[in-house]
Image (cartoon, rainbow, N blue to C red):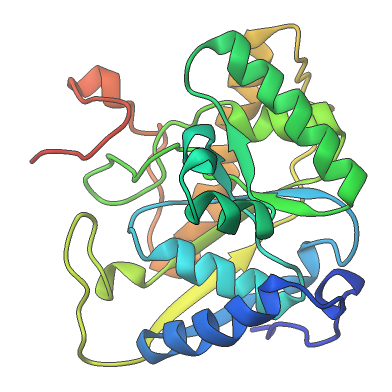
Amino acid sequence: MASARRDTSPEKSRPSVFWLLGGVVEPLTAIFAKIEIENPEKLPREGSYVLAPNHYSNFDPMVVAVAVWRIGRAPSFMAKESLFRVPVLGWALRATRMVPVSRSSSASAARDTIRGSEQLVKDGRGVVVYPEGTLTRDPDLWPMRGKTGAVRLALAGGVPLVPMAQWGVQEIMPRYGKLRLWPLRRRVRVVLGDPVDIVAHGADLTRPATLVAATDLLMDRIAELLGPLREGTPPAQRWNPSAHGQNETGRLES
């Protein structure tokens, strides 16, 4: 297993609010999770990227953020545009360079994608996008069907789309469950894969069907990375919430 590289990227070496957050979030997360990172070199040391991890616990964004920070990049996530108007929280989101997205309409979402990708390229930074859009609905916690946001953002900016899989967080906080305080430092494994060449697979912002196909490919790559971590074989087809009468977003009621 390859450990996270410790060389400091230009992004991480510049003083920023991430230094303060890293000093708080990293040791706090380390109380609960012993994070092991495989293939950290897959994340670009410099320049823009879109990182696409699986999502199955409300605690796993902490693990993803710490992993990205340890690799040497400053972690930024997509966040609802409305949150940027909340006092204090809005300042924190802007200070940590989170990317606002609108859920009001497809037209607004498309404009946000273009603006977000342009800003990423201009700043030379990366962003974490959960392609599933919410915690997986798959009963066995495998990645479910993805949404096209991650593919759109990477394609619009012409930046690498890097798949990530992580496993073990469900032992710290189950999906929709409470934080388990004991035992401490449970093992959590994180692995990064080669960037997905969505252009070679025909992804085109003007043709929605190609974006769906590229997203399916991305989700397959994430599932393939997750299989060895779980010592299991991912299902051939990604779970489709609508086919099972489930809402696409929000809390899944059992």
